[in-house]
Length: 284
Image 1 (cartoon, rainbow, N blue to C red):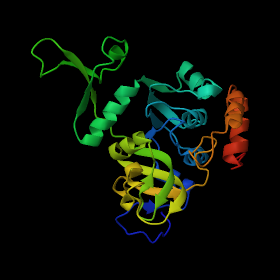
Image 2: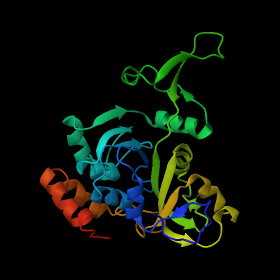
Image 3: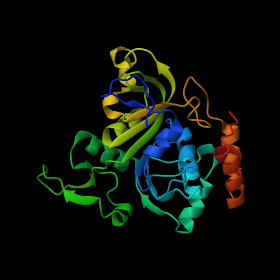
């Protein structure tokens, strides 16, 4: 249950912490996650591992990174749909790579425009989004849910591809600020607004509580996701660590390299989990 926050009942709920949010994400849910450079809610990801979440389906918006690799390695994931899974400069995502090669998870290949287009269709309340870039690729054969149709507005032959609207069960991300109305500030990370609008429920951790209503601030409002689209928030200081938050703390490249090396083997990954996830220890 959310903590008593003093917020109006029609606003986003304020939860006691990341563990409380993790309990709200059911097994088997389709969870939309941002890439490592765009404010993933790492503290909730660790909480999902601790609560032994199972059969999650992860949607990369548009790619996945450390959050997905942790969840996959911990046995929390049944399926991923994404354009890529990578640890960036730290290299391949080792737990994803092994799970995919062994057939332990289903992988639905996508592209960045198709993911964004499908979410934007749900955001706008239309059944599909038309795109062109995937035409002629092998992806079309492997994605029967993507349909090639004739452009109804063209006089001559003009094939286009349509992606069905995609409404994740849960959007999950981190933010620099939330206010007492439950609005969250994501700055220029507009993909976070898209998944909040498209998802059935949206949970956000935040660094600091900001007084006042950010939607009434002319400078902040353009970067705000309204509480209308936010189910619940929880404060989690350094909640994106070891990834970064602009103007708060940088990506911890040393820790990412440590993880990438440890996770190359199952034993190393288990040691990492014990030290940095299950025990709650931090290197931040």
